Length: 374
Image (cartoon, rainbow, N blue to C red):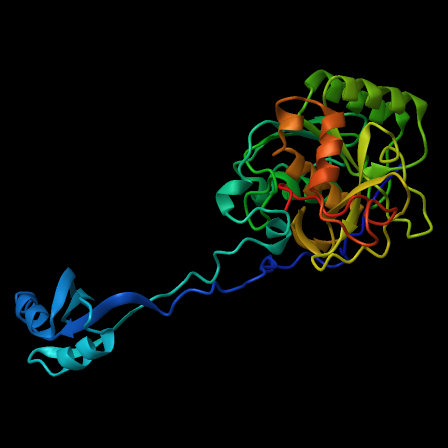
């Protein structure tokens, strides 16, 4: 079995972390605070009372501006007077250097990355969740600065313990706290490493290792299980997936990256799993994503910044879209309270933003997963 993956690694040593891809959009706020004037006084603070009275201002605040050796008077205008009239009047007064409107500004880095806003997360505090999410993947670089402060545990199930790119990238997209903001910050992440990165660049595993990892997941009973790998049907693993579903674990699995002529891979094609495909931030489908009637939902998974051992890389694939969906599932009561995977799948379909042809389709499934129906 292989991992559904497309990571632009190359052969060079990782460079310094690039800036995360932010979608910056200024809010349509008024340029000024209505009915307020700022008067800059060249004199002692005691002069503010006289100046405010002469300018016909109601004092809001008087503050020394030590860097300029000035005093700032902020006042409100009483109708029918106007801001423009008060500024003109104040500028002529003795001791006044100038007067101006109280201008408004906005922080230009306050927006979340578009991958969050598209599904309904608009504030950084909304990234915080509780509960447990598990992943079966290659070993994670637990020393990565991007995971500093994350609630994280890892156990090895047949894999080497060497940190690998794929698992580390998935972990950062789930619970990252640094340059890569995780979708489920605050959740406890348990890595059940069952892929050996030394066997193949992206990692490789087998039934016996995955069976141990799935069994460990059954004992753990996480709220959500992320499976960003795929292969052929496996009866033993199918039984374990059924057992996990009966125990109330919500399972998200990557559809595969074999291209539009490739079928949805196992375990995503299993009825207990929510099969995830990838789209970009323009809602365009990932060119290498598998297609099929089993596709359940789409997640943002193209050209994302993710953490890998030693640095950061841009990544694309259904694996990474699955991490986005798994993180979103940690906000759904069907997974974290009711522990009802069937109800989760119904809710996901009801909330999704329909893409492509109307209704569920083999390219996008129900559409882009959203936290609230609009």
